Image (cartoon, rainbow, N blue to C red; front, side, top):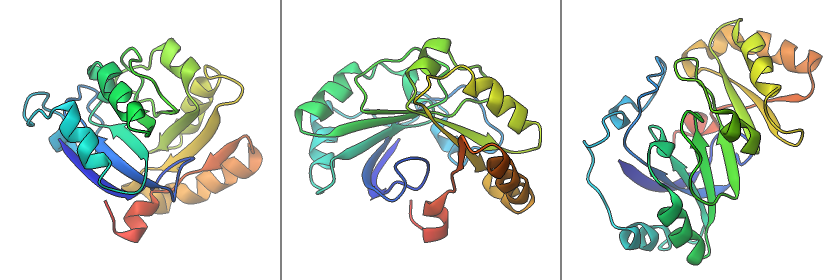
Length: 193
């Protein structure tokens, strides 16, 4: 759907230069999605692996975030192999609703209530990022935290439009449950993609 070089704004890799490849296609349907134009699977032009790798390697950073939409709707094996052959680190942001494909240096699973994540994807996660939209999301976060590995980083991130209301609750929750960390959408504060 789109690609751009920027700063990763969320989660564990916040602040690091990264090239984003946003793939079209998503049937998860999050109400708060800020890229709903990514949902149609075939509405976006296809690109060759060579063109994607060439675009990535025009920039000095070698961290590549594959996101969507829901990127795991695609077979990501060929793309991640080509990126790794070019010396890139591969990171994915996924809801975990589809089987894991590809070879990953970092897996961020951000499960959604509308389509459950697969247990195998949760087990492979390096990072669990829960979007906090209302108070019930804290219990929902704990349910998913019980399904990830012991070394998985746990993040709570306020949904952007609810941040003012949810941030005090989120801060109190993390202070009482220090296995969690706060994630903010710093790219929105920086006004960058």
